Every structure is written in C-alpha cells, then in structure tokens.
Image (cartoon, rainbow, N blue to C red):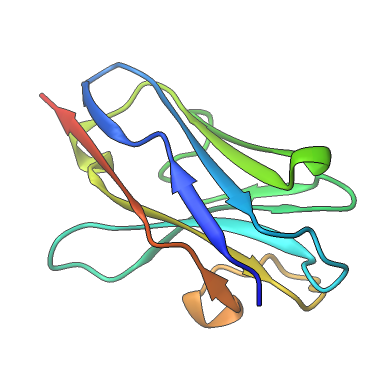
Length: 126
C-alpha cells in the first residue's frame, strides 16, 4: 500500500507563497498520477491539480490556474505544489492523493483516487 506524506503547510500573508511536498513511500508502476485536493471547514473536498508520473502532463482547477504549479521528481517519488499569490480563500487542509488507473479526462473527483495523505494545513491571512 502506498503511503503519502504531505509537508510544507503553514501560515502566510495574502500575496505570499508556499510550496507543498508529497512524498510517496514508493513510486510503483501502479501509481499513474498524483493529485492535490483541498478542504476548507464546512466545505467539500475540492480538486486543485493533477500530474501524470510518466508524461508530466498537468491539469488545474480554474480557481488556481496561473497561481499554482504542480510538479514532480520521479527520482524522489515526490510531487510538489508551488502556490503563489495566495488568497485568504486558499485557506484549507491540502491533501495529496494517488491514482492507479489511466485516464483520458483529468480526474477531478476524490472518488477517482486510491490513496490519500494525512493533509497539511495552509492558512492565508488577509
């Protein structure tokens, strides 16, 4: 079973930046893509971005496009989320998740993913 560990969360002022990391216990052939989600208090878990391990192709939610960048380091089995121009509405617990199956349309539902990390808190103050 793949274990995912997020890190890099914290408190930042609006307009600032943070970089989240998600380290996988193993980069198995069964892991096809990695995604980031977030969940604010009282809200549903929301898709942020996804990246394919093999090609590096990415897909973003409209709310973070041009501000956030997802990237990967295959050698370290690690995926990153660089978050710039942060807004108070970006405040949430951020989760990474892995998907085993291939896809044509980018998977943007939590149900599309197989394993999850424990989450890391990101708080953006105004």
